[in-house]
Length: 595
Image 1: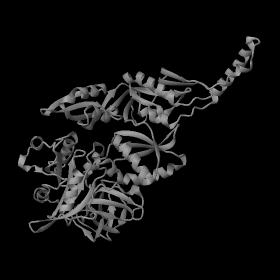
Image 2 (image 1 turned 60 degrees about the vertical axis):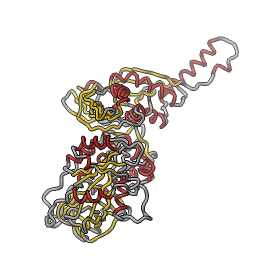
Image 3 (image 1 turned 90 degrees about the horizontal axis):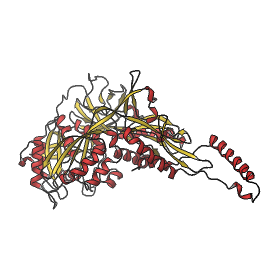
Image 4 (image 1 turned 120 degrees about the vertical axis):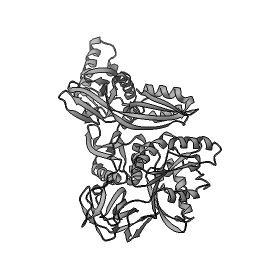
């Protein structure tokens, strides 16, 4: 055990974590030259295309230090705020972390939040200053920032270029020297934490774990704590670029186990594995339940693919534990699932992965957040969907989730960023100058205001410089109303939204105008109305397509024309009572792009 080191790499998005991991793999000869490629641990096509890490990746390296061989288990983590749950799982299974900071960009919001998460878990931090070979690198300035943040000396910061490999070799020795070996009792009953899992169509579920106590061997009978079910171990092994089987994995090590489980529901990330004959007394604490921030409905494009979508989501959830779902139905779209995501990028990635990995095309409804509704009877309801809101007469008050947002930017963009935040109902909590030209702003603001396009707008007004990070602080009372869209007098439930009272009139009017452009003309007039309760606040009309019935009247008395027009009017009236309005899919998507 004293020769094992478990560590992860944490940083803001695009500060060079995966490139540094490449160099460490090269220096320890874990991969041959033929297998080496850029960002070798990002094995998804989507990760390569977007240039971001989506999944944490675990890999084992062997490093010789002072004549002894050490096992280094590296976990590369994502940097984007939407995948912070992946980071928290990696941190739970490590004893140390490399904190990577870009020398040209300095300390960013996500750097700070990932660092605090690591310190909370008691990890040993090794600071690394990356990209020192770039022309725009400010080595001294950023080194001072890191020293202020960590309270370390400037000589403790490793200055490297992960692209060229300069200065990377001493990091491996520092990992052995500074990061403590895992603690645990090799003779105690087996206790292992599952930190990730994948589904293999031939072998079933493969679970990745870290052993806290005891050891696990091939052919043993093991039990999963959360489900209470027992299995025989078909194969255990270590994680290199491929899965390498071995007979036993000892205390403190990281590996994988295959037990032939075919049902995805039987494996939960954060569960504890123990032996069947001699189980441990309690499960490992350390992985909190994930709380989704953004909710959206997912529906199959063909209604008969509902069961297929359920199976696909079950398998997908194995590989992405921060994704949650439950069945729901909608009048407009039929049966589907209400899904919870950590943010809008997460939603986009999930949709794309479902299509690529499982060939499943889905329709996604308007994303929204979850609210707490207090009724006049004294009950509290969680409402994820505007259609689940009780009648206005039964509501005492509504509370919405608030976040504490940290924005780090150049001070020249201070004004536009403040205006953007104030427009989104934010209140300034504090401002702090990190250096002469970089400012950190802290805001309290409603989560619903950042769900749509806040991050895009922030990047635009700051020319890409601002970094943004947030965490949920709790619920606060809000003046929210449900805005319904009525088509021909019938509410279209997929288009209704919960919105702040002050923005309702303006939003309702814009919705009506937009829908007027998108809904095709029918044989009868279609009134499009925006309503709050029984009160109509905006209206547009899609004009009917009509035939000129008076064309055959050439002269004669006016009553003959009147008779024909009245007859047509009665027909249209009858048609309007029984006619249904076809709403194209583009109308649902247009609501997202209202600006």
